[in-house]
Image (cartoon, rainbow, N blue to C red; front, side, top):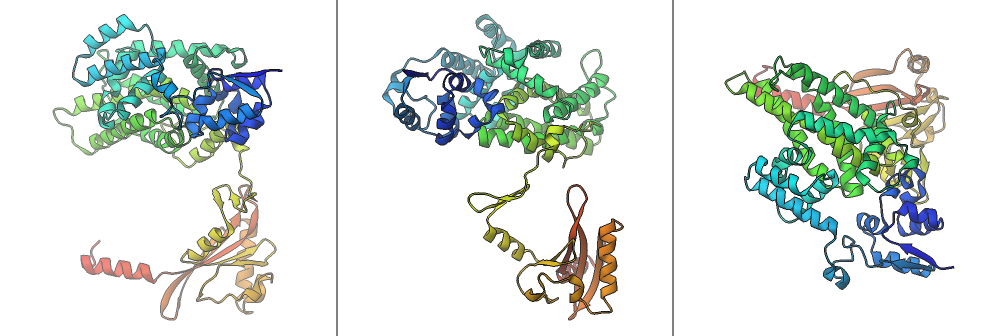
Length: 509
């Protein structure tokens, strides 16, 4: 039976037609295809050529592999964005697609704005030619402008104008457009035919936002909290009065989470650079402007500057809702969202929005193991045994670990002030201390075991140098006692540092 692959179809459609493609594509490097959540989300809008471009897999390799497996490929010319297509005669003479034509027209409008033409004039011409435009099209046009040499700073300056041009100039228009898009989420995912990718993005986003504790749920609640503050401060003429700028400045925590958890993942893993490069810059400028305003005394243009930065913060809510969050929703896998959920716990509460518990995210744990390559895999990353050994030996500390059964399990290597013979490994820790010290050691470990104490610091002099010896209880995430860690640190460097500081200042603080 002839097996024909249409490269214009989505990966999801092709796998439904030919399930054996999952194993074939996995061997080619498309590992996410084995994850059901990815296949049923991103797979519905991703084609093989687009995926090859993102992963830098030559289309020639994919074509030859599929052909060897008995498939006949339709439209088998490598995608114009693939790593091997630049020299392909077929792509160099092909007529521009309708999408490319729209992109060129959108770039033209952006260039007109950049040259100083008024927003009103450009909008009038734009409205006559476009009845609607998707956020992804704007992103593509902005990315191509940057590839052509337009500085990032110039694209960033136009960012707010772009939103006004494409999404409506007034706050009411922007909110109406956003609500219209989100309302489509009433359609269940399994009923969606991916004929409108932007609609699907909004539906997928709304689905994730509805999950209590999911990162998009928390991000959205933070935006809602900011919007409430801005609404309370907004006067009838649209300006802001009675502003608690210090409180609003907490949105910097929200921006920091985006900068650490969302933008880099989009850029590095999915090659989506536009939102990261442009919106990240805007986040920083909003945060810095608010900080500067809080440090200065109000002057003649103070209120004008406050209104300007708050308008940008309000506009960022719109951009996140309609551009950033939908892009993340259709790209990130379930594992990636779980990792984001765990990492977000390290950040302070933003605008009094306390993150709810997401059971799926709580269940995410990278169980320590040794993988097929011999690397030791832990929650915080992975290393080879030589790397881990060298890391522990490089720390400027003497390290000892005693397990929950009071047995010496580990000493790091290197010269030590407090000698620890390797023969003491696998012996009870109490056997390593003289009788007069043993009761104190037993009491410390007992206190750690019962939870009475978590650490005991001991300062001492030895050989004319000052040392800090610290005993610390080692517990797992559930609080179960696993053993005791002893670290010894030479503190002479700190004494020398502060002595030098005092000599410079004459002893004054």
